[in-house]
Amino acid sequence: MPDFMNVAGIESTRISSIVSFGALNGMLFGPFWGSIVSATGFFLYEITSGKYMSMNAFSLASPLFIALSSIVAGLVVNREHKAAKTIFISLIVLWYMLDVGREAYSYPWYHLLVLGIFIYFERSILVKTVTSKIYIFASLFIASLMGVLSDHMAGSITYYLLYDLPADMYSSVVFVYPIERTILAFFPAFLVYVLVVIFKDILISSDTIEQDIEEKRSKELDTYLHEDVLKIMNENK
Image (cartoon, helix red, strand yellow):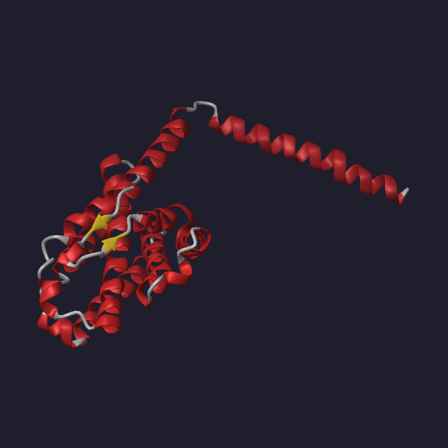
């Protein structure tokens, strides 16, 4: 996937599309293993590409942002909404605790909008994802978007602390970053949606699914009796 180059009008800056894989890993593997996969994958890529030693301080911290994206997206998909909201809101509060946050107060407007949408549809998403494919995609997209925006806010805060970027630079992209982040969130949500719908349809369309499961259990039991139980009985004779 291509990266977004020269963001905020600053030369040689970019938003890596790898953040999409952070959200993807969180939704596929959960908040714990997803974050490990994301951080480890990013770190190993930089090591093997020979770029790690030449990376700046912000780039060195980037695996943590990717891992955070996996954690938040994974928490939402796993229905651990309280923990996901706590992390997401804490990042917004931390932004407003900074001088730049109070000056560029409109910067997290998209984060607040997504948070509001998530809270508003939280209960209906829990219920309707069982029967509605639209709600399945909506829930996955919100999970992905919250993960991607968590990476964004954590990165914005860290960038300010490291390089003291002026508030007007943040204010200049208040209508740009939502487009970038929405695109980055769409792809992992779509990929997981396809996987979920395909496997769901396969299970539902299979008239013999329960019979197949019982046959598998029966075969496993027969294998256990013949290979393990009989072996123990013969040894004790």
